[in-house]
Image (cartoon, rainbow, N blue to C red; front, side, top):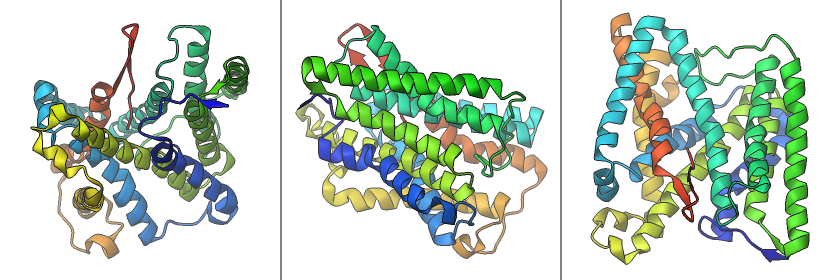
Length: 356
């Protein structure tokens, strides 16, 4: 068999940092899920997951956008307008429609973002393959259904986990959409696998990265949402599968950019050396700690053992301003990812690979 994968960086890196995290955490949950599904998240694990990965991955996009002077100048207007617009729109939604509507819209924007990340990764792994033919359409539908079917299941049957505190996840009043989506899901996943096996038989080449990405996505989302019905199992799979690959992608993108002699004048790229990886991780953690500390002291009051017991008093009027302000980094992260990751397919099509 000849491996025909256009790796993001290398087989070792991709299998460890991009495809490996969802596979590894899904395997752990499959082994321990029944024992941990209904457990509360311990403080140390909350720090690792929420501060170390979930919030940190949002701030890692700063290293691809605002901190990189060349990239910032390239899209200066976008990078200035986007956060201001996200905050202003958030204030308007919160003021007019209220707390629940605000968090519900943020939650569904996040869901869209998570779905598009997996689509984006699959597009990266099929670079060089024909665009617009039947095989391409099967790839598109299969990766979307790998995420959308579990979401339809979640919206059909009651689940014991939450996406965002305060968000209202709507319930579909009939089981028929789930039944139809399930049939499509099984059919297109099977069509994808058969197609790849036939291509391997005919050409002798096999796209390992693309196939593993689809299988990892379907397995992780199905395990976290359908197979187990617990907040801890859902959070473990959801956060690790999404956050670690994104932080790794940011790092390796800038690492490769630094190797290009054309970027020798960009002194910021000198940071992207292996010896500075701990500083990269630490800087993201500190940004996450600062943001979550404000959230906890102003709104949640759930982690005094991490942030202290003092509180930040805030009136209802101030919350209208500050809650959209504190969500602005993640919403801006969702918006900007529609622009910063693009895959050109030999002039035939530009695919926006929304990765985040």
